[in-house]
Length: 383
Picture 1: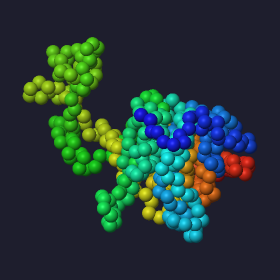
Picture 2: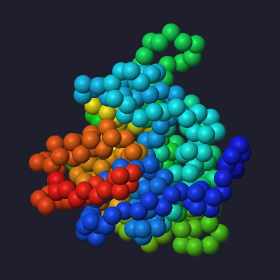
Picture 3: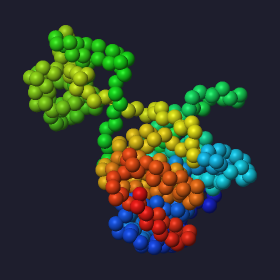
Picture 4: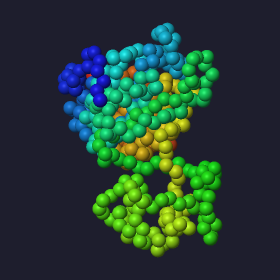
């Protein structure tokens, strides 16, 4: 599926039109973490052409503008949203609308795909008003087969605004991979007492809570070891055993199969052997109430994404890095990071956040390098 609109350029036209501003290579060979002040389209091209990072980024998280037609400011250490430029210092303007906004996002996604590794993933944070158009663009660029989730994020408490429509308490995160070989560290959350009581209702002779699950799964296999008889029983029509018969026989030998009165086998799952329950596609990570930079996201949200879709020493990229929440979460989880933003206020907020957190989160002699493509300067700083 392709979204058609005016002035939509080819990927080659996008790439060739980006200026070739260069980095000054001061200490770049030893930098694990890079903060860049620039139009992110220019910076992304340089990561590809100058730093050789095409296919090297394992995780991308971006929280771009949402086409809100607002101006976001910072004043006296607090962020706010205004419709003019008189209150505070402008952090960023979110004034692109319609086709121009969609092409703005698409241009960056074209380069981000080039940077993404074959085991990499991208999470794009957007809202309900424009997000469905962006999904079509991401289907086009990354392939609909690489669409993983449309994650609903509960962002705030219910509101009682007087409007003809249901209250909006959520936005969405579009999750895609480069291939089907993506990094995936299964995320789990602890069972609540209610979960334990509802899900693990049975107890063995020693009082251990457990539940059971079917030994078969949907999908019939014509041949193979998952379609052979187990204890003289074939899987139901249209289904196959979840494991080879030899595995099922070992489970039975270990006492981990429960047989019903009708002779139906089910696998026993003990509560005390489970690390937690699977994370689903509705996340409740509410926005911080008081922020120093507009639209800051919840720390735990980024922590979950980074732990799930990257490994230690992976490179994590955020090219709308804002106050640096993604970068800090990456550092905290022993990932390398690259942050890009063109806003003076964003760069200041990021450096402040990183420096303030160093005593608790940063190892001794950790370095980051700050590049300003606009002024053609490079500052290498020790955190």
